[in-house]
Length: 128
Image (cartoon, rainbow, N blue to C red; front, side, top):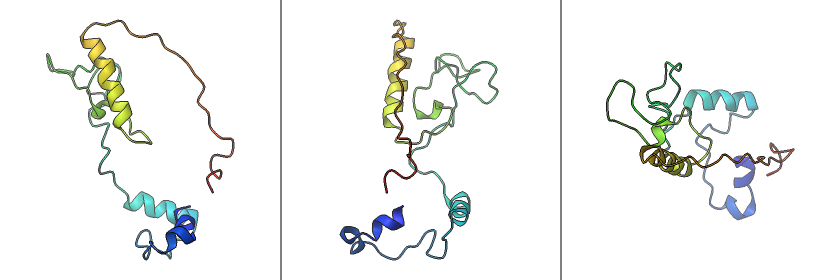
């Protein structure tokens, strides 16, 4: 999709030569392999002090943000996300801070609202 976009007249004059994964990498399988072998996270780090239940052996903090085995220490940032989000971490990190500040201040939890999440039926191709 990115290759298609940069070939458009409005962007083509701005685009240089492709350096990664390279013009010789063409098929979906080749692109998948290149991404698995060569991509790392850099800016949106999360999940390094994962939150979880007592039975989750990989969890560093409990659902209240308390660090297991350390008294009077809580973590309320992106590091407690159980896994990396597929978007920017700013909004979920603010939510974590808001929710855990309510826990720390012993404020009542707001009632849960379940709403459907819309997803286009042809989401894989709709933006082409």
